[in-house]
Amino acid sequence: MENNDNILQHAYGFDDVSIAPGEITINPELVDISVYFDKIKLGIPFFASSMDAVVDTSFAIKMHKQGGIGVLNLDGLHTRFEDTESIYKEISNSPIEKATSILQKIYTEPIKTDLISKRVEEIKKNNGTAAVSFIPQNAKRHAPIAVEAGADIVVVQGTVVTARHASKSLRGLILSELVTNLNVPIIVGNTVSYSVTKELMEQGIHGVLVGVGPGSVCTSREVLGIGVPQITATLECKAGRDAYFKETGRYVPIITDGGIRTGGDVCKSFAAGADSVMIGSPFAKCYESPALGYHWGMATWHPELPRGTRIKLGSEYTLDELLNGPSSKTDGTMNLIGALKVCMGYVGANNIKEMHSAKMYYAPAIKTEGKIYQIAGLGS
Image (cartoon, rainbow, N blue to C red):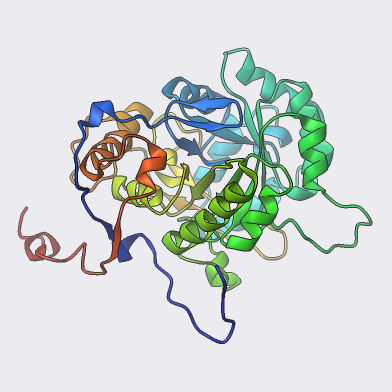
């Protein structure tokens, strides 16, 4: 997609669009929602975010059993502390006005490389898929340790990641070399553009994370002023993926990451072109998540410029209820897999790639049209 720098373009988020029903319909139980990342198959196209408040080794194993993946952050608490239980309690018990400073203090503890191997081994001994994440600055040094211990997928993740990066280092992270040296699927992000998506794929990586600043605990948009609403970001990266596929014949999945709260958001992500979604806050509200109903961004503890906040979500449901229901709520926040399958049935999509052809409309009234009784609370 070509951009004219002199024109202020309109961008669309989840609440700005709706999905049109298809010409044919399919029974939801007949649709296939599996997706591949290189040779690794996911039964469900869901990643739990690589955030300390969302995924520990136990949660990663539970996500594997559901058919998805929980990405363990190996730059965070789990490689800084042998026993994290007391750390989670300290964070959750801290008063709101001191939460960020306490997080900053906790994350000054240095990373212990022996814990990188230990965390991977904890997942593998329970037959889980070990997907682990590193910031670009640490990936070159620490990812080989994780892979040697048995990591199946490496995620290189930052607020914004590009294939071309200027730094003081004479030889920084070269993604093509990381792909060759590690010999496991490499997922890289985050980005929101056609050109960066295509350039990242040209490095030989196996997946791209889409989204800058949409997460509930991320404040990059407020602090830095950067970000693109998720529907537009996904459409841009989809165009880059499809152009790369047309040129090379190699299909590289994209993952819409952040800002997803409901089944409707999930469905719109796939209609916009996503092959999978990465979700944080809804998973943090599971009883099985490690942070006791709290959530914080991975830039919250930045020593000079924190770009996140700790929020209290509460614990509301099990992981199985979130993904598979049954749901007692009417707001779309539970049974995300059921919502995706039903939507695909209405659209007439047999699989995720066919879902990419679903027609969408710019429809800012989609959540309010005819809903006066719901909005006014008169239905209670």
